[in-house]
Image (cartoon, rainbow over all chains, first blue to last red; front, side, top):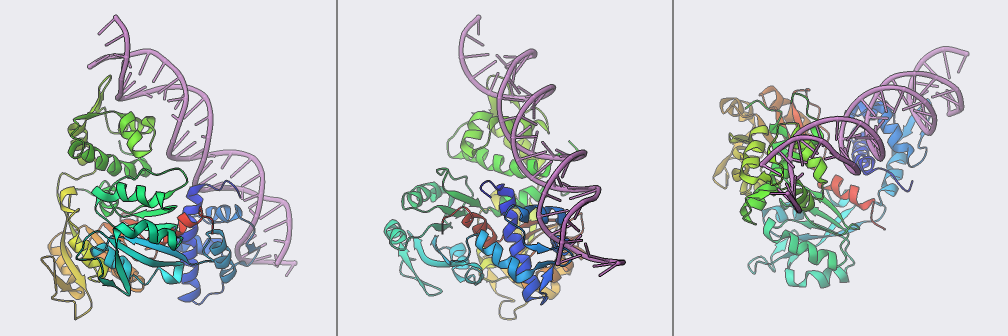
Length: 206
Length: 206
DNA sequence: TAGATTGTTAATCGATTAACAATC
DNA sequence: TAGATTGTTAATCGATTAACAATC
């Protein structure tokens, strides 16, 4: 359990999402690796192999009890606590993230928002007041925040990242279209819509 | 060149992005697989191997001419044309995407926006008028649009996807937190911030 | 019991890396 | 020339899959 491949970890939230859907939308109480795989376009063998890294969660003949497997996945992914998140950038994207109601039910709460634009500082974003980015480090440390969402332009992203790391942040979801350099103990996840679109156009006939 | 692994294709836009950065921000005209890899946290061997699927773009001793490699990557990824994109959903996220100025310089133009909310239909979004989603298929076909960005709630995403596919869309960037079922000739790329955050919390100590 | 499905093993498949001849 | 760096090969490393005994 010490050395589970990251590619396996990356699939667990997808399993968790689909299991929640099966429970809430389809009102099912059990499922099988075959059914889950069918719905996600993943082989049943891969799902069983992935889960086997962490224990035995199913029963031969009947499959998996959905609520139990959801609970196990939430523990594995450290989602039994709610994670406070700092949002950096109060532009259009920052607004969208601040208003997104999908964070809370899945384990995350945006707790503070920062911007460097005096016209945005003080603004109310879905109940959160935008703070001056100068206060970022002190507020992050005070609230013991370990996760940040970066929604700033590319040209300030690395500088802000360095400050986040110094302030103790260990995971960054980066929406700026730029690679970030961080120490090995800091996680970075990237979301650049253009990179995603460009990957798909390769397969399209111009 | 017929059968390049998708994981290789996925790195090409990253190379392209960093090369553009090297040219525009650092004013460099040449680079090496070593330098590029250093900046991206990728081995130089992997970069050379990836590029070798498509041809020989460098020179021994001197490396790669940046502008030339950029042009080659743009051709490989089919970015020599500008791709019109349909945006589905005019909520906060739709607003953010409609105002994002990073699409045009990298090959994409949001050409139409759709929503089903009568209060949003007719609204002006950064120069685009929000259309009734009932007109989605006809407008997409008329404009010969092959790429859509899905920024709707999860509960309508599959239904809209089916309609997009019928209208001829071949690539979907999906922001709804749900797996989409599509025919094999349709590309889907996913962007669910919570999935990305949950992958990172695995590595965090609660 | 009969049917279904797990967890696991071994085989297969695919991706990454190290090394180096070629050559600018 | 000497130094640097490519493109490519072969070896290594890692991930996926097929198959099946175990068992609910």
